Length: 294
Image 1 (cartoon, rainbow, N blue to C red):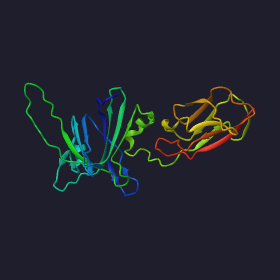
Image 2: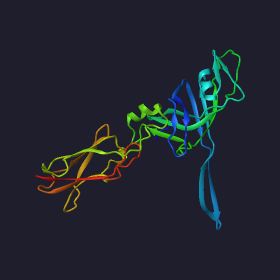
Image 3: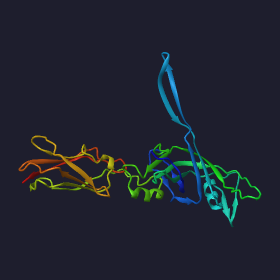
Image 4: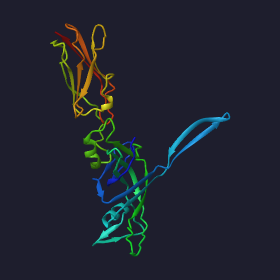
């Protein structure tokens, strides 16, 4: 078990469009330096319906998602953008009609096991922060600004938050590297495809100790690479060939290595199931190829 012990890499991104049933768009994320605290409270409620003198049904709902940011400094440029103010000639000008824009908020938190959790909040607005100014005394008192925000679900897809942990089974370093380039990631909706299989389909005279290698066009979710989704069987008897699965670092190549030699002069089936998915959750259609041992 690990707990959260740190916070850094605080970003915001202006939400430029959020069409119902469409694809949201954002400006490029901008970093806010000096992250101290990011508190997120979904204000969730759970209610129970009682019937026949006992609990009968429960339902939960998410209310206003409250966010509190504490940073070492909130410079005037960042205030102008987040709060809808004007900055001219180095002067921040606040007006009664200023309207803050919708923004996404991203950050990463260090866990006690040394791994990071990455987060994006999808859509929210911030309010003008309180100003507390205090004279300097005998000891230094840091006066760091706190800004409050209210976040909601996106109209386009109902999403309000997304996470990935570095110690998650399906995590790849590329996910962390690209996390702060967009609040919606790649928005990939295309299923993975099989680029090649070795032995090739209908191959004959295959050595009994051969491996079976499937190569895909993109990284697969590691949690879906298992013996239920990748297997080799004898075609006539339906006997499953015992063996082990391995995957390359990029998770695009899956290799089946038989425990011993396969039966000679036998037709075999190499199967990839439809439970295989890419990192965006898109399911592979499934495939079957055959080969005959020597």
